[in-house]
Length: 88
Ligand code: FES
Image 1: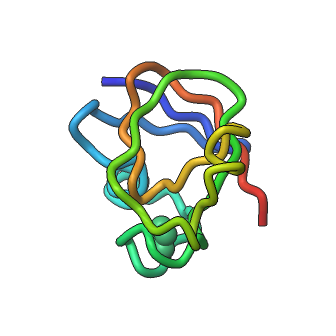
Image 2: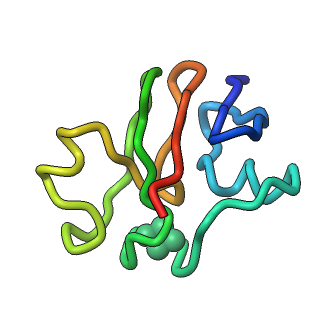
């Protein structure tokens, strides 16, 4: 189980769990719409920590954004504690 910090909120997320799913289960409000990696609403900046991403649409997260440390909460699994920041 890893600790996810996003702005001033904190919650726990298991490796096999998607970050947005854990946030919802622990009543932490995060932006999300399609929950399928297609809209980009759940895009956040990663300041520290390791993660892996399931497949998503490049229109939701470009290669440039991905290499710049942005992730989609609906497709990200933590591999360590994560420090994130909302961008919208
Ligand atoms: S909620 Fe649409 S890409 Fe994550």
